[in-house]
Image (cartoon, rainbow, N blue to C red; front, top):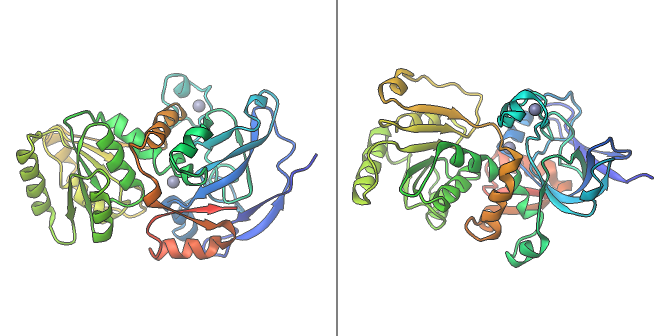
Length: 355
Ligand SMILES: [Zn+2]
Ligand SMILES: [Zn+2]
């Protein structure tokens, strides 16, 4: 038996990706072939393609780690997944090593990320381990007015900030600050809000701020208009007015820019948590001792444990987190044009490529 499938291969940085046929079969034990319904274009994909961020798998490689689709074939032991609609975790831990067994799957050294360690989702089909797949209830999906392609963003853009919010300990009454309110940051705002925090969103883009002001941000601030000190004063004033704490702010850096990182770091208060969610190759100059002086902490976030996916998806299906206003679909065949448009920031919403 053979499956007709194709994927779009990156052959060299910045070189147009090329379509190439392949046969996903036969599958190894524990693997499934997922017919891709949609795969989101992430900032990280642009990093690999434009900025020389190192890939673990040699080129040529199909990028794409934000996949939703339907299981169309299964290897030994994974047969129960056949026919089911699923979200593929962006990072799939091995589930067996010592950190995995200790509940630290984010640092599993045998983890597999589609479009980095293995062939990714800018394809008609992707072959992944069945372990960690998140089932999607098609009836609830339809009731929520969402397509399977649209919920592909749960695989990374939503679950990464979801795990950051959980790990940072956001609770009712928290003051959460999200720097970078587009894409991942927009979901961070919504998730923190759904977890009971009052959320301040900071960006340099007035349109993004206007949108997120309607979706969970209680205060929006433009870092183009306010310097670091003025931003901190404005948030302090907001906290006072709303009976929120002057200490223990929870700050999420989601912009993945040097400027955003400096803004986030400048907002440290006593007992603050700085959660680094965005990625950039750029460096910043900081006084690290501020962490010491404020008894604050900074934490990184790599991916999201598969165990948290169902709860994150549930927020979407229950309507507590909106994805429709933040997603647009494009044909996979337009991948090179879409990458350029996202890179130039002509496309501001999450672009999902549909085979
Ligand atoms: Zn990503
Ligand atoms: Zn492991």
